Length: 467
Ligand code: FAD
Image (cartoon, rainbow, N blue to C red):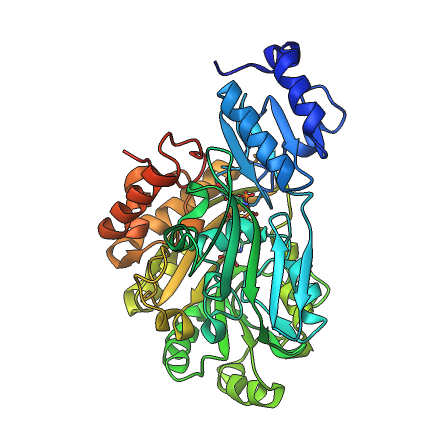
């Protein structure tokens, strides 16, 4: 009984019941804000749900889940709306949208923070950095904290403080049968294990509690640019250099055409470059010292490394990933930047067409690898680098060609694939989800799914079917 939009409007019993108990906003096709609320970050995805339930709090989430149960509607759950493949919006079904739930409370004495599911990374940093504290998270401020955390969470502070889930203390969850539970190491510990990497498979997380760590608020951070033709040399030097750097330093290599930003000299705009972006999570003077060798390597065409507020550095990549452009990603982890990985990557990078395509290679290691592989559902703690081959255009024009380019680089890297980060998967099928977790962990996740969501009510995600 999957109701169409019209049927839903007509079915006054169910709708009246929901409306009577709902504090947030219920948006249906034809409402003036429908288009605004159905759209997600990736402009290549356009879907038309029958109902968008914009929850104002936990009571609304409970009501929305119970409504979806009664009407047997397909449910998509949305927090920040940054799912690459658009798994937070559906056709015909219902979107449970947590974007209004923006509460953040920092306890500077206890060094903990509570954040509701609709919080974006920049909003979280603003609150925690007011006390010189931080949670390791991603590299773009408008990404949703919820989806990022549930998949693991990699970013600028990961080598020092681990994944986002490594600082997670507890979660509040609305389960598939519309019940509210808390999960932590001491309470529903199996669920707590599963939400730390298992995505949205086990329920809707309405609130997260994190441990906080000291940071800045000033950090030595920025980026160094070279012409892309020099990338084979730059990356060979980079590989030796990162083998020795302390965990305070996280770096990300980006291949792209230089963007027309004010910090980039006009003569460089549109020129293919290789960029080493960096953030030092420790004393500024130490960061300056540690970064010296890479900044001196060869003849950089631009160096924007400097002491700066961490929140400014966090926003550095924002202009490269605005809402509404067309995006397609293929991702893999590799153990090392071998000559083969470097040469294959650069060979393809030199052939990217779009001036908007920018693909990162994250350097992992450090604190990530100090948590046991079985301690959380996240997999791939031993990986050396996560490569995210991102193809971007501003509209559909040129998108197919750029997407083919992304696929061809990803395929050419196949001999070096080690694992894949679940938050960087497109809709690639069950086998790829299984690969992301490894066979043993996947079976454990399946058993957990049978316990918490035996009907696969939450299936618009990197799905782990119960059977
Ligand atoms: P949404 O689209 O809202 O949701 C994504 C998935 O999570 C969906 O399946 C949804 O159903 C599920 N979900 C969302 N909220 C909940 C909830 N409260 N309870 C249960 N399930 C839920 N990842 C990193 O680790 N590091 C990065 O630096 C990073 N940078 C990124 C930059 C950009 C521009 C983008 C688009 C993505 C980036 N990612 C990064 C990937 C990101 O972690 C995932 O796309 C993540 O799913 C986004 O979370 P969201 O809440 O915005 O997504």
